[in-house]
Image (cartoon, rainbow over all chains, first blue to last red):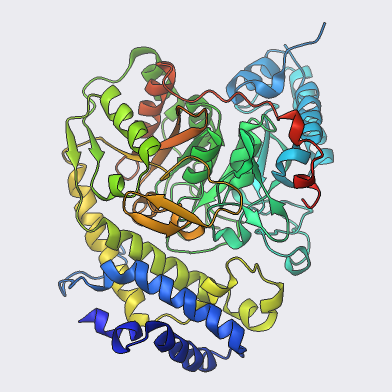
Length: 72
Length: 483
């Protein structure tokens, strides 16, 4: 299930899970964030996660693809 | 005896008057510049004025008329553009820190060039949410743009300056951009008409991108005929915009004028309820129901998966803007807008699977909506959950629940622009005197249908009539000291 990839679903404390996620992924992206920045970014990840939840709960058929079509 | 107030007239009326010599372009532009000087201190719609350019463009139009040359469609019409459009001689702010905007541009954006070729006179550039990421035009660098109908309320965003300038007669039309609702929200809050064309319908060449997959550009005006005329002038293919796919075609304005006079027969209309009612307050629901009634709507539709569409738009927006601004966020975080830099940074960290799922769902939702247009010509939905919110308001209380204001004002617009459908935002009056917008949504490429329907509402006297008169008690008050 797509929504199982949501860190908030894997922890008893979603905010803490997003904080851990933000800490690891932000370093991988080359950011150097202090604790206050990390907390604010984690809060935004939590907000985006909540808005995205209806999308992430859907099971899309495999034949639905996003590729652009190039017509002659 | 004072002359006519040219700044209050429609763009087409100004162009007609200038073309026949009833008034000079110089006189019109001078009057509008004076209006901006006297009124914008209270509203803060403009970030830069291009006075010299406007007067030079006006002089060129007056000279053409004196030489007896044919006059173009927007002769002497004063206009302004959201400050994400390139304007020769100005840095393109895109709502960001002036010190990070880069050098002045050496060329105009494509739409600015086309407007100039059609005789329009550029008055200046307009305030916006930084990077176009927001719905309120509360900008930490350039101040909040206030609603011309109530200066304690926002103008909407992200094209807040574009909506407010038109509503306050500080230009005849303006250009803005709409990724998730940034033309339709300010139209609703400021009580003006706005056109978000089909994705790729107008060129974004020379405008600062925000979300490549969903960015649109389009006009604001005080009437439908002006929207149509401006669209006719601006439409056309452009190699500067990868997604621009619309060639110039038959005049949309002609159809709008016909619809205004004769009405539209056989229009198949449905109102969107379900999600759209759940996230609409009483004013928004009343407005959408009254428009549906005026068109004798045949059905009410409860579309499935609209919340997923909004979620997908949200994910695509956060991811793409996060990727686009990643370098800036890494190197100049402190110089970026505090109101949205953390969401943008969070967007750059989202799992790739979410983004791919959003793009796949986009195809599915588009198919679902295209099937609807085999049964209906027009869909009606509210544009905003409520009338303009107060400056600094943190929460919206809606039938569906309590939500944070800033990211949620686009709840009703986001699921539509996400799949690129053309929409005209039509302002209606409410009981408390503030305007509220209704979305008239058509099939891809059918701006003509949405505009014609808007013209019918306008001709029938059903739409909001701006009565802007800046309240004197607010002038010079403490509220404006920090603009």
